[in-house]
Image 1 (cartoon, one colour):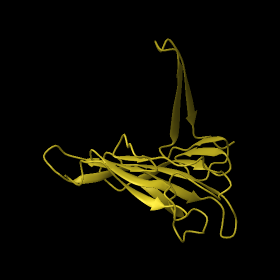
Image 2: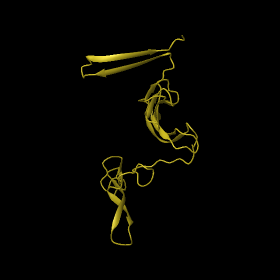
Image 3: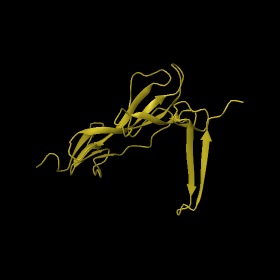
Image 4: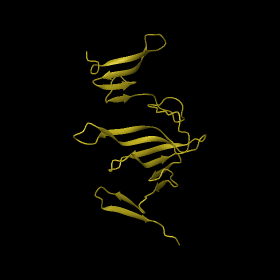
Length: 178
């Protein structure tokens, strides 16, 4: 039997009885946690997660640090091939936890990072702040939606209708003094 293509299950004995709780399964190159029939490279099945910070979650990422305002926490990196003649994988995006309150103060959010076409390091492009605010181009949004552009002008386009026959372009420019 081929270890990575045949199905097998790792189980955990519950209460020293005949009952077994399914823990992990491998089937046709897929890995399942909490399921014996994984349908993708990684399938995870768990109980309903709680929202109070206690109890079960499907996946938990932890970092023992980063307690200061603006500190980045654990995250998910996205990598893919950058050039057809190379086997190298490059990071193209990421989502990280973000501390939005100072040390000893609750508050958190998510920071989204993207890779610029220049090939430089990932740049923070959007933040979902713990105060129910979204920041694009800023990690400290002052309003429900705060868009910041460093070029002096910020352009936003809002469209509706599948044929794009109805649209509105909103243009903002730097406020002049006076």
